[in-house]
Amino acid sequence: MKGLWKELISGWNHKDSKRKKQTRNNTLKDNGCYIIRTYDGHKNSNKKVNPEVFRNETETSKTFAGGYVETKPIVTEVKIYKALVTWRKVDENNNFIKSCITCSGFEESWKETLIYTDENSRRSIYIDTNNVYSAITNESIGDFLSINKKQTWSLKISNKKCTDRTIVLPKDLIKKAIERKNKITVEDFQKDGSFIYGKPLSSWKMMTFFNDGKRRKFAQNRANRMDRRNIKTWLNKHDISLEVKTHTLSKSIAWEL
Image (cartoon, rainbow, N blue to C red; front, side, top):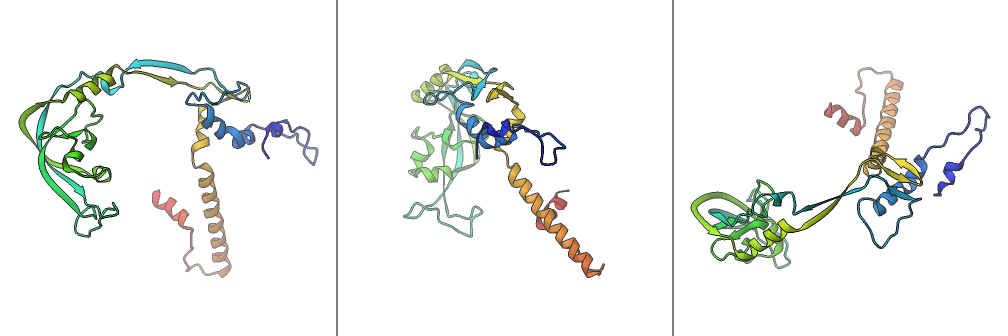
């Protein structure tokens, strides 16, 4: 049964020796996760929030142009590389064909070609196949190789060698970079200041709604019960030479230590 009635319990225990103490844990276990998922972190126009149920007093908005990566200047000319492009083969059902010969475990095709990278959309030092284009036709590498979307995900680029040649980026890529740079973005930032049913909710308590604490506690209790049972059996046999059996979860903890 759910409801705030759990917080209204009063009186003394059955021995009349200790007054009943009620916390908000029962209410938060019942409704806390649902309320946070529904109303916190984003603005949902379809659901109006009752301030008596949930409100945030420290929520602020930050507006900036472009993204954090688009703060660098726009690149219009990039280098051309000669590279080995590898992708997986698929069967008639669009499933990868398995093979025990290759390191990846699937049959692969390869092609050596000239490529360049759109540095304006590159977000890390690693190669992102979504930003790689053919220097021959100015198409994306997937369209140039005539492979489907699933095969494009399996693309690998290796043996890159600089050719000391450059190429001017196509106008559409430069246009997209300018649009990303001028795009106005609004993000919400907040600290401790959330209230559920009129009482404050700290950020550390909010994080407990989304962890695996219950499953972890159940596993620990199960391992402890099995260990105690095994020790009792070992003591009842009165044979010290026998090995004391422990639960698999207990072994994992010992191995970790």
